[in-house]
Image (cartoon, rainbow, N blue to C red):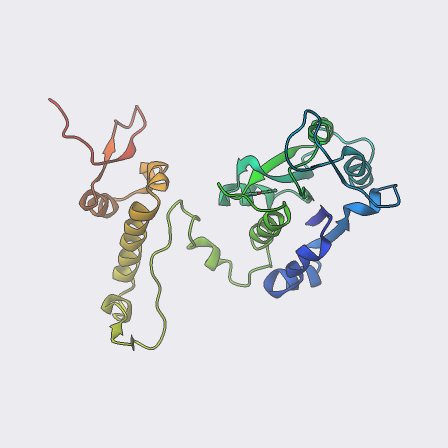
Length: 273
Ligand code: 97T
């Protein structure tokens, strides 16, 4: 996969050269190119920002350096429907970045990240870009940081680790949080007792069926407590009888028939007859 990042702080992306993703970059699994947006400015002060028309606080990014940079990276003529490239623009007003989107992006051969600073990028850059290439505006969550770099860093790491060969043991991707729409439960390593706190007996039992069941129960419990929104989104077809029993104890039940598309609801009221 080729990854281009446009930013006024190229050093912000340095962590992508460390650890597991750093190895993938070294090995050529990720062909990473980080570019300084100021290289496409034409004035003496290498200006990238200006005040907003209509007034208001803060500064915006001027369109010209972005236009020149994106022309250079994407080519003057881009096919809007090009399935081989995706431009990712981090912004607090973007679509929420999820593991599902990470999986989708991991199947695109080339990603181009446009990292804005200040109060954002002149809208015409996004409009122009949208007519030439598929664009996804993404947000990491409902909070604000100072620029798109931290989001680009997170997205590149989330996507690159899904590429074949980046994680040695592909099995470890199957049972991680969000892989199946649930959170992972607690995990333990040695010693079997630490500061008076024992590891749950079942994990030392060697009974693999029982261990899997316990892990599933803990996963459901944790998800119910911390992320009820994830449980509401679960496809009931992915739940077995034991799952429904644990969820029942937690006040969750199936609502609606198979035809109407059943879903999990909390504290289901008694069914009227
Ligand atoms: O707060 C931001 C500023 C610029 C670009 C992206 C963000 C952001 O991304 N996820 C949350 C906030």
